Every structure is written in C-alpha cells, then in structure tokens.
Length: 349
Image 1 (cartoon, helix red, strand yellow):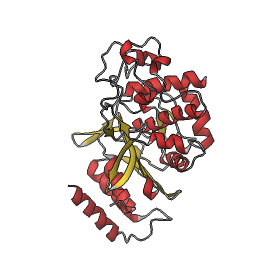
Image 2 (tube, rainbow, N blue to C red; image 1 turned 90 degrees about the vertical axis):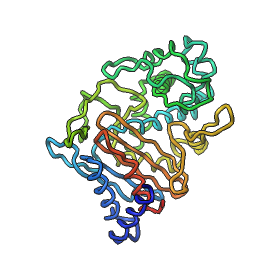
Image 3 (cartoon, helix red, strand yellow; image 1 turned 30 degrees about the vertical axis):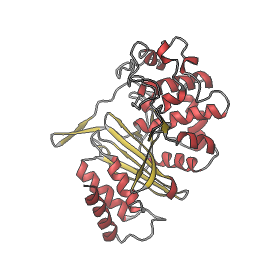
Image 4 (cartoon, rainbow, N blue to C red; image 1 turned 180 degrees about the vertical axis):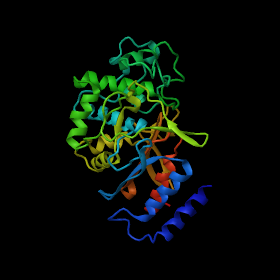
C-alpha cells in the first residue's frame, strides 16, 4: 500500500509540472490535498508548509461550516488537539530555562500528597509518557474542574508498570504539567501561554479551546457516518492534553520560532527531541510532547491530534528544514496521509 501511495504522489508531481517548490503555492500540493479530501470525506482542511525558514505554502481547502458554506482559509481556527502537547512541554522548558524547575524534579515536589508509588516519578516521565500513570485520571468531558482534581483522581489507581520501564500515552500527565506551569508562573496556564508565547510571536488566533466562547473564524467539527456528515459533539471541558485552538498561519509562526533559539534554547530543544531511554536501556521514539521516527529514511519529529470532530498533524523533517502542518475538521480524517504526501512532493520520498 505504501509503494502505491508513493507512486501516486510521484504521478501527481509529473501531471502538475512540478519544478521549484519555493514561492507561490503550487498545483501539486493542491492536487494531493484535493485527492485525500475526496477519499477521506473531509469537509475542510488547512495546510502550511515551512521550508528553509520560509512559509512556502499556507492555504485553506473546502468548508469550515457546512451549514453556512464558509470556506476554509489559512486563518480558519481549528482545534489542534494533542498537537498542543508540544506547547505544554515547551512551557515547562521555558520555566526550566528561567531556573524555576528542573525536568528531573520529582512530581511529588508539586503534589506532596501523591501516593508512595509516585515517588520515583519526575516531570520528564510525565512529558515522555513513561511514568505508568493511567491515561485519563478523573477527566470528565462534561465537567469543568481544576486540573489538580483530574491529576489527583489518578492517585488511587495503580501504576500500569514500574516507572520508566515502558511507554503508555498519558493525558493525565499533561494536566499535571499545566497545573505546575500555573503554580510556578503565578498565572493560569492559559494566560501564561498568551503572555509568554502567543502574543510575543504574533500568534493572535491561538488560544484555549472553548465550547461557549466566541472564536472568530472558528471551524466546526463533523462526523462522516452512513454516507453523510453530521455535526460532532462539542465537549465543554478544557483539557490541557489537547488544550489549544489555532490556525496553520499561526502554527507556521511557531515553526519559524522553533527554527531559531530566541524562545527555546538549543539545549532545551535537544532535550525535547531526544528519544526516551527506558530502564532496560532500550530507546522509545518519543521526547517531550513529540514523536520521533523517520519517513523514507529521513528523521521526523511529529505529533498528531484527535478531538471530537477534528484530526490534526504537525510533521518536522529537521535535516531538510521542512515542516508540514495539516488541520482537518472531521473525526475520521487521517491527516498524516496528507502531510506525508506533501512531504513527498518536497523531496521526502
């Protein structure tokens, strides 16, 4: 199947007369996105490509709101779901840079009433999902409650495995990290990211998910079922593990920031993008809020996200200085296929 997909991408490039990817958005990317949107029944998508320190493609496709037939642009706001984890982890690293914490700090330093089994847990274990804490804790999608309450809901649950011995995805851990950011920064984590990250970087459309607040140019989420689209349920609870809404235009600004060292130092990024070493000495392809693997033999740093009505992905290819960001507004989408096709068009094949 993978060889067929790569072959299809190559055919698209030939038909589109692909030459130079720099400059204006091109027909090859448009063809890849259009094909996948048809195949996957995606109402709307937005795509950004950043290469060699420049935004070379930033564009919307399809429909953001099916009832009003509102078109998607690169400034349409999507829930980015677990793509948010890199931002939460970056907030922790910013506090580390300021000397307010260490990633080796025990979690019990911030939760002194944690059970004895949590004694070996560090912030690093929470960022790389190797602590053995249950995935969801006391999260209730229909109830607004303090992040600390969700975390403490896991106190009575056994660890899934000895600390650091395995990898298991943990949303509860990111509730704890957000809670610690709030405590050490002296402001709610939502405001911390606005003042410390989003406003300084000009990410004016990026903020916390909300079911009731007004968000200009917001995309609605959908479900494809029995040959038709329907509206996806919008859960009211804010979860730091999938905290933010954003646009591809804003995320391209974030990517340009990651290219430099003005916000996160080179040392901080190296720590975030290092694979996890388990207690038996083996390595697992996850850092702090980022998955680490390869595509077509090229190292890849990436993360996907899924929330009701939305699927997203953010892929970086550091050796090629290439990033592809895809946001979609249907629960069943596979945005990785779109991003990988586009990466192929830019030479990752």
